[in-house]
Image (tube, rainbow, N blue to C red; front, side):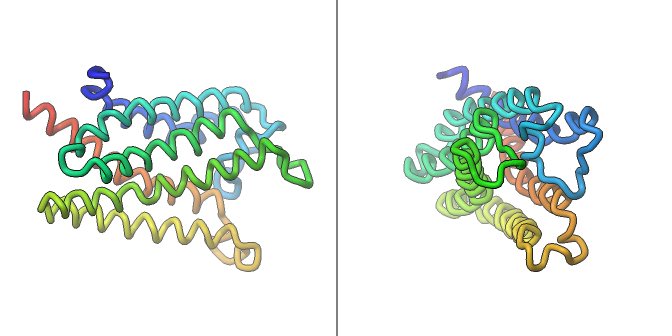
Amino acid sequence: MLFLKKYGFYFLLLGVLSDFLTPYILGLFYPEMNQMTMVMSVFGDVASPVRGAFLVWSVVSGVLFVLALPAIYETFRATSRTLASLLALAIGLYGVGDCIFTGLFSIDTEQSTWTISTWIHNIGSGLGYTGFLIFPLFLIIIYRKQGKARQSNIYLLLFIISLLSAGVYGLARIPAINDLPILNKIGFCQRISFFLNYLPIVVFAVNQIKGSKNKV
């Protein structure tokens, strides 16, 4: 546990890097994949030529996020055990729900109805993405509680940007309007949204790593 508390933020960065690069690296081996118009979960479809690699990679990324949880909790435990737990839970939901569950329960777009695997995949992804999205919100509250207005304002800005990008991605999923310019590129909207969702986590992890080095 001491090892995870010490190096947890490195695992967090590795988790982000691994998860972020997944579609772009696997896309090189999936000629039919259109990054602009297809969502990333299609990599795990039963018809995908890179399905096996995607499923394993998703689980690995999720495990990296989970390994970061002790460090996240320990960082803010003295400030508030409840807030520290919620912050760790947000990342845990993403690591388990949107990464590990994606690897263990793939989808089949050729099925006219949802299978049990599809249900678990989509519910897990929904919960995971929620945790992913609200992670900076807990940081805002924690830093305000600590009296660190500058840090709180930084994450507030990142949170707003993240919400706006998530809103655009959400609109791109609505059939009635997703034929509009930009919204008709759901893959592009998803990838931009995820990139902006990653930013608060990356900023947080880098700052924590720098802080720990300065204490040495």
